[in-house]
Image (cartoon, rainbow, N blue to C red):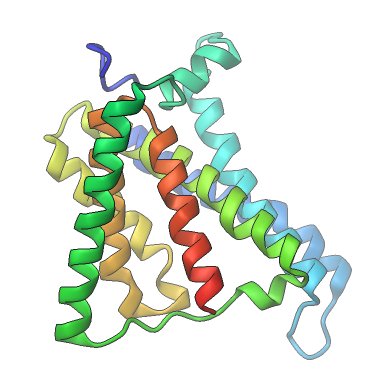
Length: 223
């Protein structure tokens, strides 16, 4: 891990505001698709749903890049501030394996106590399977790790201990998924914390992106 971790220089307040701004930006980017669609029965077509989802992903990418690029910082340096950096493969594999084990253990205990989490299946609303893979496995994984780990956790970590910053960033991450199912929020909070630990221990959000893709792929196959 690089000695200058965390790489951010925007702080907790700006990081939290950045999430609000990213969500707002995503909503605004999705409005044209809704206006063009003009659904009479309240349901959007798969194409419009896909564009709305794409807008959300773009919001989660654009705002962190703008925040990290303040002060005339170039794109390469902005990406590095958000954790898109090289990492040591042996170290990353070790922490990725530990992350999978920790999340599976949490899922087993949580399910035993509270039952299977119920989450709305939104994949089919995006249409064809390749579109589902593009939006859920690739776009969501990359954009959410950039926003919630690179920007949010990175900013919180400047002033907070790792576990506190990880829990808070995980709580925000989980809360924003509440619309798809409240019972899935605690596992998502745990997932967010685990991804934050992987980020700090490897010095890069790339291992977390890979794990996020694997998790979303498993969820997509299960639906």
